[in-house]
Image (cartoon, rainbow, N blue to C red; front, side, top):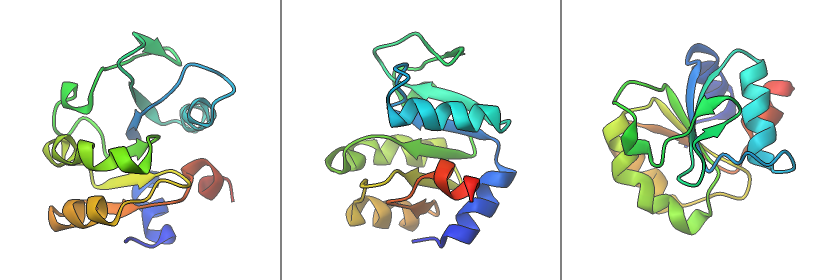
Length: 132
């Protein structure tokens, strides 16, 4: 797993992020993180099949709706047990980093992505870490 300092350097360079599980509900952590990143100049790509638009951006149903190279990193707001379901789509998308939110951890997911050359950080929040 990548160290926090290196992850922060990557996302400070890569200003395009897909947010899987982004909610339009203001009381949800995903909404607050998405808004925080937008306010910091990040271009967000919401991934949520239940909404057409979130935070003023067109929402896609799945990561595979994005073309490879569209985003530099992916922020995961899903249950740990669902991470592995996104492996193939993430590998196809080719981000430099996948950031799994607080409480979101899967060693199998991490191993498969790192074997594909994609860095992974888990159990952290970019809004908290960037805000420090």
